[in-house]
Amino acid sequence: MTQLVEDQGVTIWLTGLSGAGKSTIANALVEELQERGRKVELLDGDIVRTNLSKGLGFSKEDRDTNIRRIGFVSNLLTRNGVASIVAAISPYRDVRDEVRAHIGSFVEVYVQCPLDELVRRDVKGLYEKALRGEIENFTGVSDPYEAPVNPEVVVDTESETVEESVEKVLSALEELGYLNTVKERVA
Ligand code: ADP
Image (cartoon, rainbow, N blue to C red):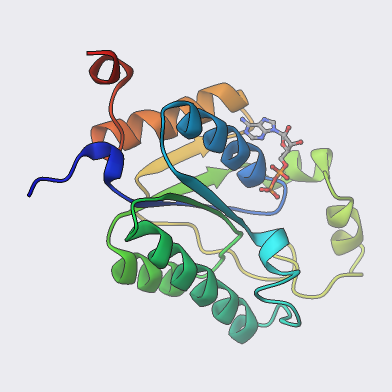
C-alpha cells in the first residue's frame, strides 16, 4: 500500500546555538504545517528540560541523555504520521546522527547565527553572563558545538527573515517528499 504524503511522519530537527532562532522557526513551522493539514508536535528543548529531562544538567553525558530521550519520543510520533519538530541545541554530532539513524525519516536543520550576533541579541541574557565566566558549560562560549556536516537545510538567521528561514524548511520538506506542495494540495 502506498503511503500518502500527508500520512508520512517526519522528524524536523533544529540544531544550533542558544538564541539562534530554533524556537522561533519551530513555532512558525507548527502553524504552517497545521494550516497544511498536518498533525504536528513540538518538542522544545527548554520545555523538555522542565519535565521529560527534569534534573539533567549540561555535562556531555546529561546532554546526550536529553537528546536520546527527545529522539525516543520523536520516533514514536514520527512512526505514527506526525510531523515532529524538535528545537534543541543538541551540540554533539554523534548523538544527532545516532538519533537520525534510529528515526530514519529525519530532516536536520542547522540554525546558524554568528556568535557576535547572538551576543548582540542575547535573547535570554545568558551570553553576557557566560562571557563573564558565570555560566559553566555554555554552548558556544565555554562548551563545544559541533555543526552538522550534511544537514538537509541550513538557515542563517543573521541575514534571513524568519519567513525566509521557514520557507527554506518547507521547500526541503516538499522536495524530500514529506509535504505536498500547495499546488498538489489544491488539485
Ligand atoms: P533558540 O530557540 O535558538 O534559543 P529563539 O527562537 O528563542 O532561539 O530566539 C531567536 C531570536 O532571534 C528571536 O528573538 C527572533 O525574533 C530572532 N530572529 C531574528 N531573525 C531570525 C530568523 N531568521 N529566524 C529565527 N529567529 C530570528
